[in-house]
Amino acid sequence: CATDSSTSVLTFTKAVSWPGKTLRVNAYGDVRFEAPLVLGSLTVGYNSALGGDITLLSKQNQIANISLNRANIVAGDDFVLSGAAFSVSRGFSSETRSALDLNGKNQVLASLQYDSGSAKNYYGEKSVYVRSSTPATLFLKGASTSRTSYQTLSGKVSLVVDAADYPSFTQTFAGRAHTTTGTLSVSNGTLAVALGATFKKVGEIHVGPSGNLTVDASTALSGMFTGATNVIVDGRMTIGANITNPFTDETVDLSLGENGELSLPDAMVLRVKSLTI
Image (tube, rainbow, N blue to C red):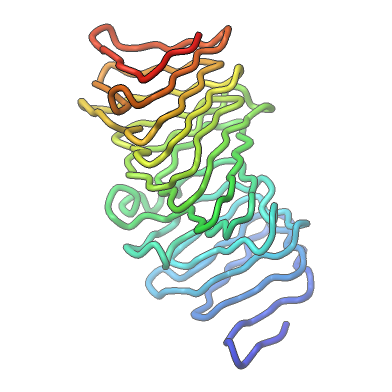
């Protein structure tokens, strides 16, 4: 490894091969990994202190699980993450201090989940963010076990759930007010928006022929997709009984494909700008 004294960056230029084991990176400053990491788990950050930016640069990384704890992981290239499960360990009240920063680079994860040992951080303001200041797409390829996320999507992150190998997989987003302006897509598997989660700045939603989108809340809720203007349902979209209206009236161009199915509560009146069937 080498240290750049002008920027206080610690750079690892050699590969780390430790299959099935955990590498814990506790650093106050910035760290760059230029060569492949082959790990069971990568855990980043301190419990109480604030870490720096941990930048991953190799497309040959093989990491089964990533856990973030008051530090940032930065993608230095497309697909430096290719199927890891990304879990919350402990967040912080500032977006700049607890984030997976896609940095304009497309990535693939298995799922977004939380570490049940630190559940107190998921329901309050101390979120972990998945962000990108320039457009980037996060693909979720699914797993044999469905997962619930308390991360917050922000910036210009588009989300694609494509669990082709796990058709029964459900990725649930719970409890967060997501501020991303990207798109939401589900090609295979199920994307569930629940427990008060909202995506008010998302402009486009696409449910593919083998995809499912479910929307519900534990109490009456409206406006979770108020920014949506284009909704394409080629698969199945189900709006739960506690949702009074997920959209803004008369602003959505709604398209139902040949096998598209939109299920509404009995009492809901949905007013759209246009309807294509």
